[in-house]
Image (cartoon, rainbow, N blue to C red; front, side):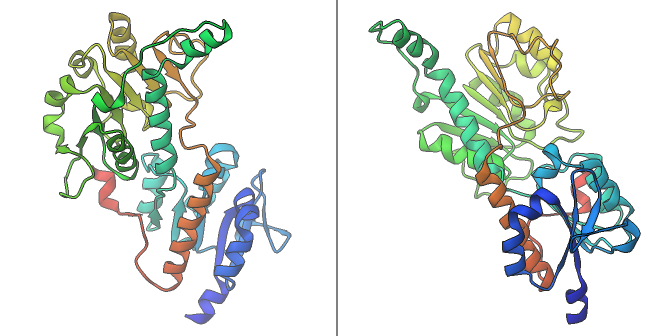
Length: 335
């Protein structure tokens, strides 16, 4: 066992390694990093090597890789590897087909909860920005006009959070701190959710007419695909705010545009879309009741540090042959 650990190689993207190399050498001095650069070229100990000359057992597919790295080359290597035993993802979701393929290959997969706090703060800031008329206030300041502009308090709002995983729970905590009434939807409630009420999917349509703020924080699967359709939208109040920080395919975008043009929801906060980047010709860009952001709700330096810590913690557990945190089992892909 000691000999195996001394020889164990870990595959990392260059940007990720540069950021965490000191922590890695301190916490796991017996492992050998194998680095993939921006062009997909591999090196070990500063020397370029061929894929056939390495045998990594562990890989950290950090969020750096997904956003601007050689993700295709990295994932192709993982899928072809005969020695890979565990992949730590930097993402919370695992709906991309590559993750199922990895698990089908017998590779252990762990997800990452590092984005939850950042996304929850993004949601609160965006909802507050809607209810607080900041643009009007700034315009009054610009015009040196002493206007007293009324706003709506969050404390009077009822929130419906669809999906009470790591992200949904963080959002629920923050909404509750504003004295909002929080209802959470979860396929299998555990009884310890941080929400005033917890419902199952069969009660969703009955809950929609009461919600002032609806947040999509669910994973994407066959059950949730285009969950927000005409029937869903018809049940909303005209004053409802709809927030999507999960996956773009949770929404039937054509149905949402038609419903917005008819007057509801009052506002849509959309950080994710079915096609990304969002095409320039998309009507969402210029819609007066839509906030468009570029899948950036988790884009913080603090999130990257938390993600590194998740990997290092799991690496320690892996080397000690302990259970891994946030492991995704094969059964999860059948839901």
